[in-house]
Image 1 (cartoon, rainbow, N blue to C red):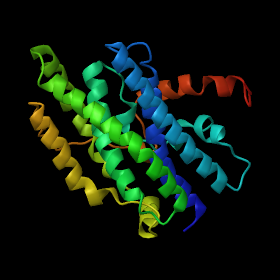
Image 2: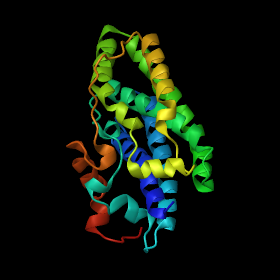
Image 3: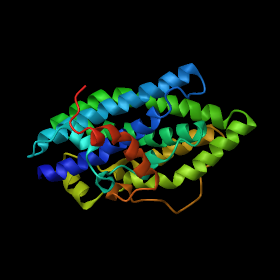
Image 4: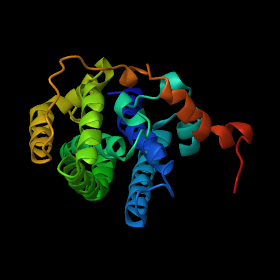
Length: 251
């Protein structure tokens, strides 16, 4: 298996954490309560910390003089391999929590499998990250239950968020031809190996939150192939501004 294939596979994991971390960082100072505000900020920091570990590994695999900052800030939109779910906007608190929970369950299950990878670096990152993501999943799951089984208004907002964001969940389990090579080598994880468990877990919590699982059979996709929503360009414009305006700037 080539380093190029492995790098592209890692992008598919790391870019999810980067873009969702960036989305959550937009909320700093805007949480509904101080405690929740701090919790969301800490989750963003966890995700960005995980991203840094992945990008450092990618930089080490590169034959060029590449740094983690180059990987994060100097790629073009089509070169990011995150799923569409994580780039969806912070419409309201119910959307934020629902987006987070849908991703957290997947992320936790992925890291659990990644701990058995043949790649010692990915194992080390997974071992460290899964403790953080376990908390993320508990936080978002508890809040989704509170919103769904709360007031009439919170229930309606949670219901709308679930209905709107459900169409982005199937893409979490898509794998490219490159991914298949890494998976077959034992370095990567086949997400379809826990797809049934994922939907069973999510559906169970939605039922507990008095929310219905959407019946739609149509799902959005494209992000893992570099075809993103209209939101992605705005995210990158803000995230990459300093690096592109002042190249190689040092603090």
